[in-house]
Length: 123
Image (cartoon, rainbow, N blue to C red; front, side, top):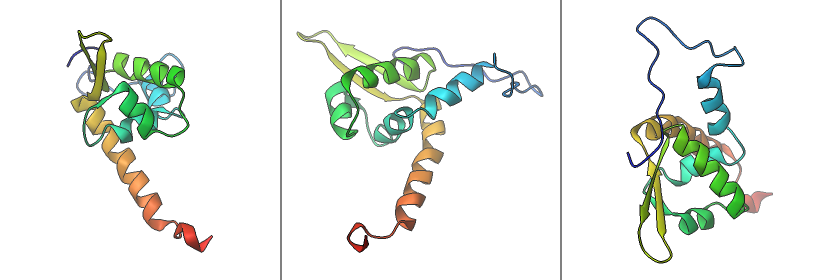
């Protein structure tokens, strides 16, 4: 992993108290389910992308919001970040193992929803 901190699993037999406001797992859930967090994880499910490729894949996201979303997902250990020392620097993002684990059910949910919606021309 090129950066970020991944939360360790709770000790054997102990779980995080997710209904307490100071639970670190709650922060991760907030970041994943944020307006843009879901789309970043789904966009990165197939392959790593450079910042601008990622921005182009998520219509409607601003550079500022993408940067903020990526920053917290990297800190949470869901996304890795790699900087190539070129001019200007090229930054690539991809899913960590933890990010793939979390993103898989989100992508499945997205796929289920899109399969069940009526065709767009039927509207």
